[in-house]
Image 1 (cartoon, rainbow, N blue to C red):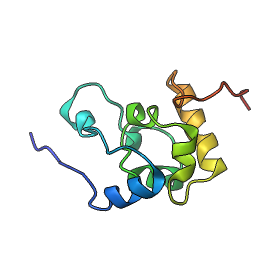
Image 2 (image 1 turned 45 degrees about the horizontal axis):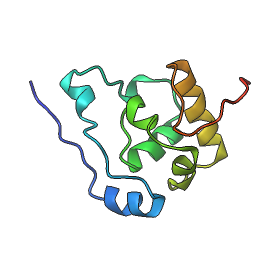
Image 3 (image 1 turned 120 degrees about the vertical axis):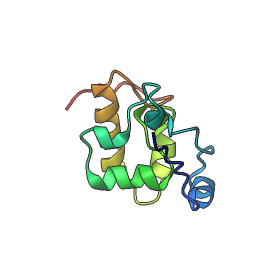
Length: 104
């Protein structure tokens, strides 16, 4: 089986600017340990690209972020935050330190 080791070289700069910790092994989804890749969820391309640029590639990693972390990601705004919350809610998860929000 072919394994891809994807760790964007620009992550450190994005993480530093965004205040996000360095990525965990997001290749877990490729290794079959049950992690859910963002590519497998219904989410706008813009939101996915924001998360990918910050080194977030799985739902589980996304749930480790706080709302402030999401808003610090380049090109992510309130709409992206709302979309992230919606997607995580579909998986029975929420952002760390997030308060429950009414369903739209």
